[in-house]
Image (cartoon, rainbow, N blue to C red; front, top):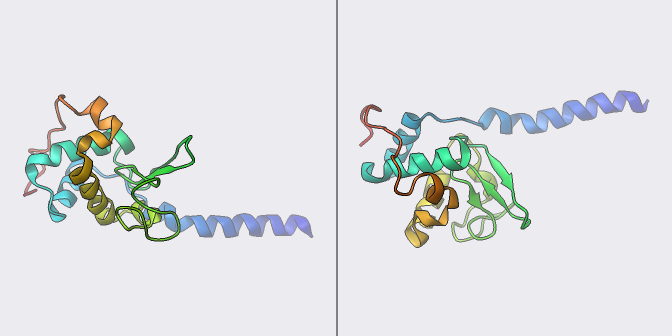
Length: 147
């Protein structure tokens, strides 16, 4: 009897995890630029945002990274749960659930990242310092009407 329960348990876990898989999206540079424009990011800074997303998540909206300090970073901009969001409920300086930062709709991730950038600048992201600061930024000039 126990052997019959195991497959149903696996099926149940698969079905629970399926929405997270379906909601994941790996953006292109141009798709991200379009979303940045739609969320009020000036074209002047879009190269920095695209570079940041490439550096921290590979443009993956569902990326989650568990860190040694018992926190995690979430979404396309790898927003950390220690200061900016909370797991399971709205909170942090962005007043958001961390889970809301790992969907294919990156509006919340952009809103929270704007708050982070306004308070601390791009230097908040170590990978931006290493991969983007003072470097050639991704070319998004051929992305069409991006604002």
